[in-house]
Length: 123
Image 1: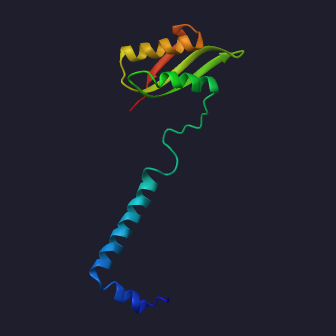
Image 2 (image 1 turned 120 degrees about the horizontal axis):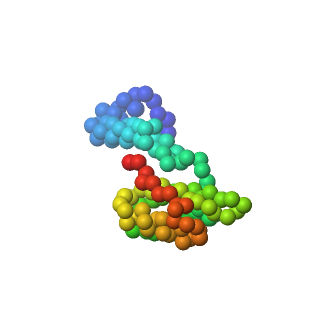
Image 3 (image 1 turned 90 degrees about the vertical axis):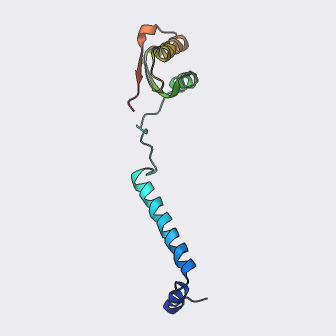
């Protein structure tokens, strides 16, 4: 089956074919714009940091707390022993949520609550 310019012109004389072609072109343009401006294959939240196994285990607990949508944690250690943790979370920012995060992190890592710092992520 060969396509010649005359056959393509005859095909586009049909109104339905033109509408379908315009719709396909519009969808391709929307997809391209989405890839360029929104989903370029790399998440905005990708900061290049890979959590340790201990941090991942802590995040499983933290992300189960009511009011927390998602969280990141960084544990500081001395000689392999946790001495502090910084938690940045997204979700309901309130006193109770912050206290729960501090309690869970302190208990899970066996550190003082004063060694846990909790911040709400900026929107």
